[in-house]
Length: 371
Image 1 (cartoon, helix red, strand yellow):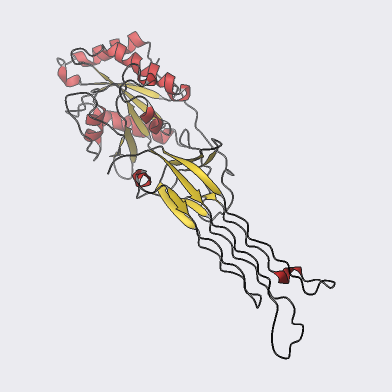
Image 2 (tube, helix red, strand yellow; image 1 turned 60 degrees about the horizontal axis):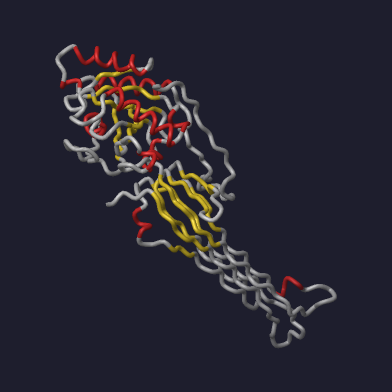
């Protein structure tokens, strides 16, 4: 299925049913009085986070969603039937925004979370509601109120613990294939990764984390070069970035030092907060240099960048050094638990039926990054 991470849809809640003007008419019951019932409530529209969905592709074909209307009331004080709510299933990690106001309505970050996006109209009151001691035969009823109508922008941000960044052909897809069961496409030419990929990395019994691979960046990506920076939003929820640098770049590719600086500049252009996210330098393709040279050249690269953080020298293709890398990542994640950065959990749990936007957001603080 085609990977789609943005969609615009229109949702319309149902209108409330009208109240009814009716009078009791029975034999031997003179002046029976008003007995008009209330109208039913219109159906509301909810978003439901479904862990079995990983793309917004379905919204390319269906963009309009409408809940049912409430039924009008009837005589004998019978209220109209309320309409059922409409539930729209979306992937976990979907951010819902009002396209007209730009307001973030909610962020569905956990499976089975529900978010109210359009409230149904209230039913009107029947004339039985207006009976008083001085007005025993009211001929007044109120109409139902209209349901909310909204145009929404859905934006999917993948949920992962660790994100991979680097130039095209730095070995990101090869690394995620080496350490997880994910099988993204790999080849010896740039831009083989055209959409983000997720992989679960297992590190012993009951210890694992999720790794995200996004399409490679090139210089000028912030201005739209290459695939641009639109996929970087999928790294905004990660707690740790692994910055892959090709130790032996292809002909015509920038040097390892310049390649590392290009990525830092593009991260800063996209989001200063993401640029300050904890980031480890991972020097890849150590198997392409003579034995013993890779660690020395990796240290020289870190020195030229002024980088004093965690440094790893690996070969994603052969697996050299990858066990040590994933073990270190797992230990770091366990030592830094907490909310995912950018996790603006505004959606309520399924048991809570309150307006969207009620709950507060939380974010974890970064420690240090590569210069």
